[in-house]
Image 1: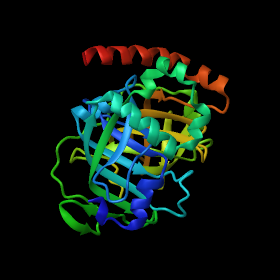
Image 2: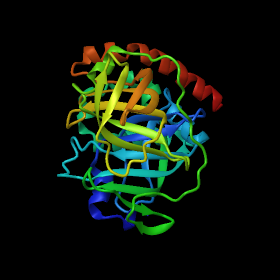
Image 3: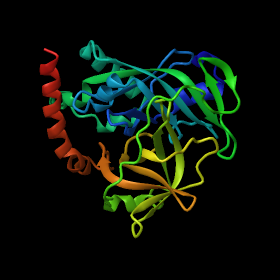
Image 4: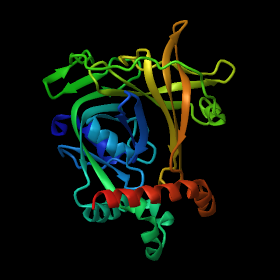
Amino acid sequence: MTASLPPDVQAVFDRFITTELTTVNRAGQPITWPVTPYYRPAAPCIDVTTGLGYPKKADDARANPLVALLFSDPTGSGVTDPPMVLVQGSAEVDDRDLEANRRRYAAESLEKLPGLRKLEPPEALKRFLSWYYTRIYIHIRPERVYIWRSPDAEPELFDTHMEEVRSGHSEEPARFHADPEGGRTAWHPRLNELGTTYPTAALSIVCPDGFPFAVRVKVRAHEADRQVRIDDPPAGAPLQPGLACLTAHSHDPSFGTMQNFQVRGDLVLRDNIWALIPHKLVGGLEAPPSRLALIRANAGKAVRFRRTAKRELARRG
């Protein structure tokens, strides 16, 4: 359906260097991470990847192919005043030929992200980093596309089941929704970056029809109340109490540096204000400005990811 979308929306898919991918785990928890999209105008799918050493995105997408891509951060894209775009689609996990995937990723990642060149290790060292360079691709076929040209206006909705629905609301039947989990909150010091270092973040939920839904929202951390407040959500966002994920990330225009983390918890409505009650903070792979800082930030993760990659290769025979 992408060929029928407005040209500026196709440009967003093509030129954005990050998109927020949301998968849903078996408990109904949405999980959102920034990834790089690979798309050619009019192509049937938008592709993203994950490393063999951290395959959870692919594992969740294989178990539940209903996923979402939010295009909300234009940094480095060169696109002026782009709309915010949400894609809900069906995922197909591609790990049939890991060597072909590795070659494809080596070529297209440097084409799209030239800033990665300065982070590239020598070829002799890459074999120790196969947990990263061996890739699993996820092909996402759009089924619904929401377009916000203004956060105060209802989104346009393009749907494979209908021409175009101006209301911005889906009429798909209800499938499943995870209610708030409850229990004790968990406050991590990095949460205080929400509203300061990160004025906005990507908020994801799961709609009753089973598709994840994500929007970029203004956020404010309130440690005293043990909650992160959500300010002025975009028009048409179907927020409802339940399991949610809030993902903060940033990168420089050349993608030479990047930072990210996510917090999972309960989305609740209190005194007519939406808030996330945090239960778990998870940090991702990060690229600080210096190579030494890069090693320090990811050394522990690299050991764990290398073990995972060995298990994944052994499982594949």
